[in-house]
Amino acid sequence: MSLKNKLHQLKLKYKDKKMAPAFNALHTFLYLPNETTHSGGHVRAADDLKRTMNTVILALVPCLLFGIFNAGYQHYSAINGFPADFSLFEHFINWENFVLGAWTVLPLVIVSYGVGLAVEFLFAVIKGHEVEEGYLVTGMLVPLIVPIDIPLWMLAVAVVFGVVIGKEVFGGTGMNILNPALTIRAFLFFAYPTWMSGDKVWVHEAVERAGTADAISGETILGTLAQSNPVQFSISDMFYGYIPGSVGETSTLLILIGAAILIFTKVASWRIILSGFVGAALMGLLFNGVVDAGWISESSKFYGLMSTPFWQHLIIGSIAFGVVFMATDPVSGSQTNKGKWIYGFLIGFISILIRVFNPAYPEGVFLAILLMNVFAPTIDHYVVQGNIKKRMKRLKLKTA
Image (cartoon, rainbow, N blue to C red; front, side, top):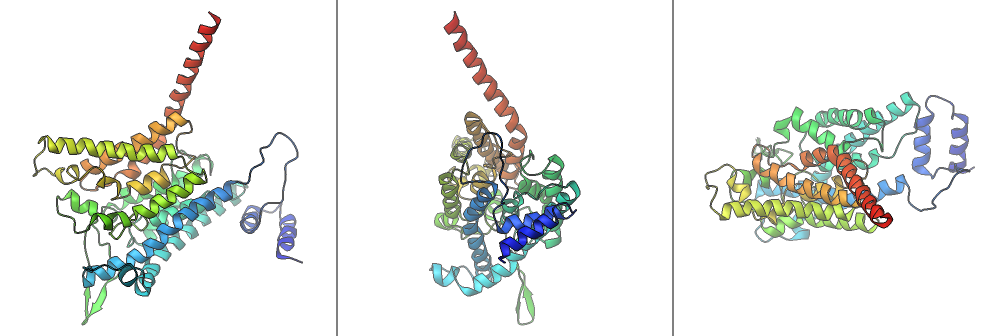
């Protein structure tokens, strides 16, 4: 008897038991459900929730792998000095960087999935509903949007909060009004701000040298710019991602590749992505205009980020990652086409606004997205009402 048939028999045997939702989740994780509906109209399509979630994870895997190598690269470079003649395979893609990166990044992934899925299974058993696939993406997003050296217990507490408050209290997958991953990030920011401020130690491990521990401390690029200090990294470093930052947010190139995958598979809205970048660029351009007009002095605490070229704002920090992977959440984002343009534009616009005027924590993407999550239904409401009014006017003209 095959494994599939054996699991199907066990599923039938325990279908009325308390733990049935948990067992069904394991069964459907390995195989497609074998139930079919027999009434009503249906649309035949190859995609379902599981395939959609897997597509997003596929788009995120390059960012995860890059983050693993970058963790080791930033660590050893901060200790030994950044190489003047950088070589991709000699200095970045090597065994030492991978081992150190995997040792620090994979525990974040394990805790995220382990704790999050445990909460999902618990609620499924208590409520008697099936375990939903929504956390498959959230579990991957969370390790990519946190600093690499965040304590695992903090991450575990935040995951419990985010899954319970951000999703389960609203009814589970498809019912939440806030992005669960960003809810977790927001909890960490407000509960443990010193670990999320951008000036905490980014290099994870201390290295023993001659009996003494060398602790490497330094700010992210946004933290450096907020203090009006010069950045030691080139534009290519920023674009390719050889810079310090949260695990999966540094490589704009790989994020754009992920965006192409999501747009090609029609999982994410290109309208939100494009309008998000346009909104961010416009806000950065306005700040550049203020600096060029001489309306702000170099001694101002806002000068560093205000004077940063508008296009450079798009390749540093988490603006690209947030617009591509967070703002495009089909549950918490706008649903109408016009609403997506407005929704994405305001996310980009507000993100740079918060980034510049909050030098203590120079990143505002997650706050902007959460804010627009709340207003997304309102945006769609007025878009729909506007369309209704236009059609009513056309109808009156035709009947007049």
